[in-house]
Length: 434
Ligand SMILES: [Mg+2]
Image (cartoon, rainbow, N blue to C red; front, side):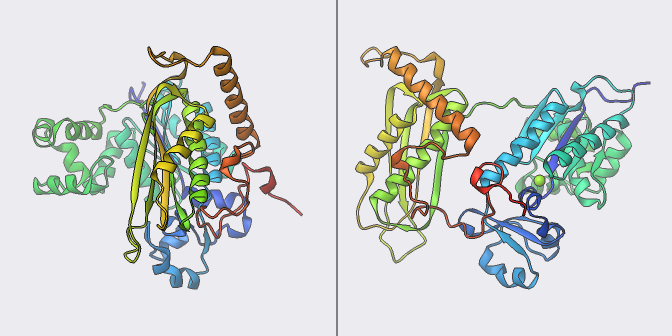
């Protein structure tokens, strides 16, 4: 008899992802307490199990916990997004090879549609399959993962939550109704995927305190009080799949911005920072095959510094013919900065954004705008292709524009005092074994 439900999803979650990435290349911190900091070294955004056990909460400001961390001998790292992004791509590529249908849900999580594999006789086979997949991910990347399996995405999230609460477990399978009921009885309703704190309070007022209460509630009653979104969660908890994998929709706008590691007064520094943000945003735009009609720049001071005069400014341009080549956009950013910049302010942050996209191969001409001739467009497209390819293979920033700056220490850069080497994306930072 076939006991597997019609739809089966697995949620694969990388354990303490940023910490795990740091540990892959640094055996000295295996089994040691490790924490990773946010941009500009402000807050703690990833904690190893040892650091969680010290009572350091997620998002805690570094300065409040400095003593505790020091006493506990915690190894602290600035965030290394090049390393984490690259490791994430490697993990996702392995998962993509393991199952025909997958949804990359975040940098460290993916839903796999196990029912897109050849049919199985018993749902236990999925557990064994996922064990093998996570072994492969660990063997090929060094990243430990945990897996929750269930007939709906909401229940797969519950299963994944259970894995983390059960020491020694790495895969939890909630395909059977008995297992689902046991798990939901022990879960507070606010811990469900899609249930916010406020939503939880309203549910509690109606006597629904656990996930099991919500599962057992009358769907019509839930729909009346909480609309289709609430009803969908209740149905998903009963094992009726309402949420399929969502295909990666291409973005409708792209933003690139950073706070500076120190305050910036100089226009030349702002220009350099904006050129770098523009280059990054344009690369993302080309990667999704889009071109943009809208482009904007913003600069601002730090509103928390009461002693400083305050200023913030945003300016946009519209292109009649959508663009995605870096030089055109850098030139626009520079012109916008000339209009925005006011001397005498301490600037804290700047950024660029792109919007109003069209597919790059369906460029509409414009009645009154001169269309660049085909030869020059093809030339610029080839140049950008070549640049993206080189930067992909040799590391970000291998080939760049002069306005992006060439100094190794750039004033506008983020504070990042304890970043580990970018082991997998910069040839000059490869791991050396003596
Ligand atoms: Mg995770």
